[in-house]
Length: 336
Image 1: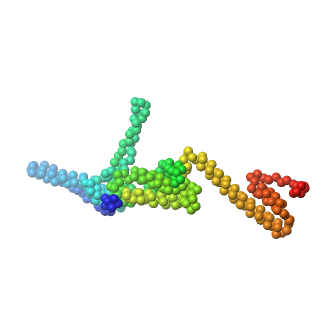
Image 2: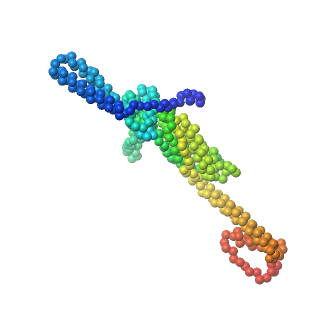
Image 3: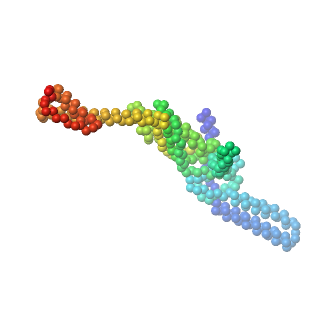
């Protein structure tokens, strides 16, 4: 199947066109020459009154028509713009150099099966009080923009690797690399980018967990660069058939779906509290150990196990408590 696809894929052939300014001078010369020929024939006919001179009007008319037809071969290309040359359905190459050019006027100015953008929107009210919207499309010229394009996807609702519903969106920067593939192998390459990008985003989202993956496991939220690289590779494989190149693809929106957002927020808050408590307890134990070791080494006070336990308890309460501790003065002894 891949072999058949490779055989049927079009290949761009870069070609050149004639200098437009030179051909413009030639065409103007032909046009003016034909007009002068007409005038000369009419003047000669008036002088000689020879009807056979009228036969010269046929070649003069053909030259005039030829000059008018040749004027239709002029076209301009801006930087990062290309024109596909199609003659009676056959592909003859692509002109990529910017400037003023001339080519065969019979080269088609319209590509078959190309992106057709809405240009006019008609809104009609129905008898039921609703509205009917119709879009009028204009066919595009054979020119193809080689500039970078941005596609910002809609927010898609998908399931991550663990089955949690999430909302995800991405921006894709792409451009046309092979004009022949973009013009002939794909029905509408701009719609192709949109559909394949959404499919690629859904596939990538299903390969990663939203967050809190296993050890060393990348996640959508914490491994943005790795996810972006994977998304770029995925989209490039999908868009290569259309002769398109993906320069960059990155996530622009990532969130839990509304139906589980509150539950996941509480879970994240609980995990944050637990992590904070663990750090506080670890620090408090280290401080208590340091305090007891310093008291023992410097022989400040001699503590038995019961007094040591009471001191540890008091220090942990002071260090781990959320509110400020109030001291209590004991006027007696620990045992009374």
